[in-house]
Image 1 (cartoon, rainbow over the protein chains, first blue to last red):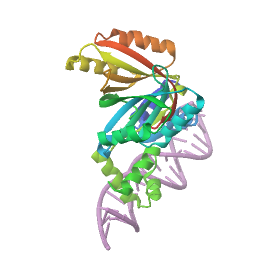
Image 2 (cartoon, rainbow over the protein chains, first blue to last red):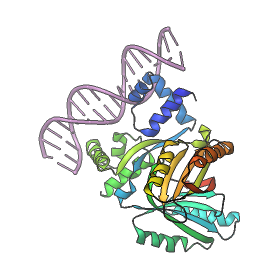
Image 3 (cartoon, rainbow over the protein chains, first blue to last red):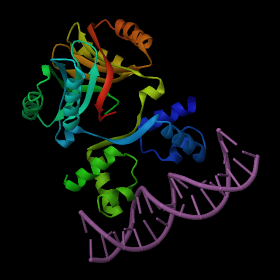
Image 4 (cartoon, each protein chain N blue to C red):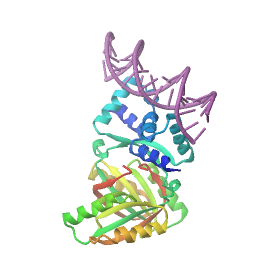
Length: 147
Length: 147
DNA sequence: GCTGAAACGCATAACAC
DNA sequence: GTGTTATGCGTTTCAGC
């Protein structure tokens, strides 16, 4: 992990489909040397993968919210049950177990407010271990490097 | 946007570096027809781009937190100033303007707790428009499809 | 560690259907 | 809209530094 590797990562985070030839040129290295570094970063797990970045709004999923969730009890079983429910729910894109006044912070992407209400009532409302729900609707994302 | 396009998107979200030839095979289409569809999805902005997904932990950035931030006043100027500061700060990976008890929810990735304290004191502490800061430290992310 | 050459495979566009 | 074909370019490997 030297300065060249960092430049490689910066370029590939900005454009994951850069050709190896172009990447090599940008970091002033030969294509073969560049390729070996990239493959090593992938092997080490520093680069976990590549993905296309979609625009939820143009997919009819323009309603995005973060939801703070508190559990009624804090046993491992309650947590595992809740986490599995989040994994099984396609509109939940992220689920983080956090410290603080609540246990989980999740990110939800749906089509519109009625769809969000359905998620709120049917999914969250159906989980007995959920005791607190606070929704923070995203109006704008001035920065979103993980999009 | 038909069923074939959806399959294309699913494949490219799972692996952004799929070759067009392989993608075409998976969705049972000829490479040229497949490429035209992908290019159209890019042109329409449905596919916003491609990026490499890194592992913060293996980059020595294992400390992740969401921070709820309230502003003292709610003028456009205060907001723009805060948003620009977030854009300029590399450890801030996301910044969302949300409805609710606070104005902004940001995601921060740093090396460790001392580094987070520096961000807290030097960056957030240096912004006069910030009136409320609540940190939610991520202990685990059972689901993170936007990683 | 690196470069450079060579073989192979893929992206891409023109064309016909 | 689709598939076929041809060309040039990129990827990848391997020998040599």
